[in-house]
Image (cartoon, rainbow, N blue to C red):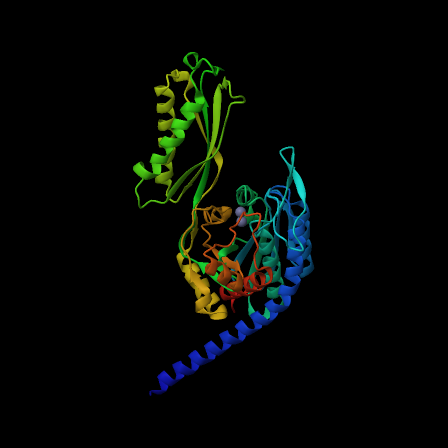
Length: 438
Ligand SMILES: [Zn+2]
Ligand SMILES: [Zn+2]
């Protein structure tokens, strides 16, 4: 063995030893903070607030950051809260959590289940954290606390944002438009985490490249000629036209788009008519469209317009009464994880929780507004990581019964709160320290 080779081995051994030491420190500190975060999570779970109404939640997030010594800005681009902590020279990492809950009536038997209601467009609706944003906030707070306790291990600037209205895709855009990357240090990396009931608590899931789909919402108003249900010959029935449109829309994905291109066209709501004996004047439909490529989504929208018009024409509607196809300007672009950053974070996480717990996941057709953080002129590399949230025992039981865990947005969503939070803190802290290590 040459002395040079021996030296390389010694340096490698020291490096691995130092890494193991940091991993140990992170785990120990995270374990301590997880207790605090779990209590915070119970509080947040019992006090959920709808999108754009996250007033108390935002106050609590600001309080947590103030206590840790962050420079805190409240009501940023709506209810979002931004915190900055400067810990010497080095890169800037942005860590994002979302704050909003959903208009869902909780059906779990948790001791801290939500019984809250809130006003949604004039209706009093039950509210629940059914997308795990309570866990995200608690983990995010726990990570900030852990990073403060381990200040000696990193150098650089930490920017954290508790973002409003993820579920409506209004939060990310408003924060960016309000100058998130201009009024605060521009991040070199932006990270976010989301629970995933399909993975076990203690695991994370990650993939470079496309991870969440783009979302567009479309409304179709179909016009007809209303009248008595007993005189169809004197009317043009928009319910029949709408029914044809719904069926023909099914051929967009199956016949018009390349089978290799991921696209979803779902008609999620259809409303028309009031009584059995009245042919109505119009029918309204709402669609959600999911996509990865801009070209494909443009093709889908053109097809929706063409199919809607053809059905109305075939029924004899005049040219000035063709269906209105309205594509909402509020949209969620696809989330594209930066390949290099994802590989680096996956390796860092594996070094702490083990390779067997760092799962390579597949892209999904659900949407997340975090993608917007990576689509500005600053071109910030972003990475969104899944946090497994179903306890291994529960997963084993479900597998044996041939069942699946309750999905996100289920009134019965039952994450393994404590372990999910603890693993989340470990992984997030480990990721930030990897990017800001001395
Ligand atoms: Zn959600
Ligand atoms: Zn969510």
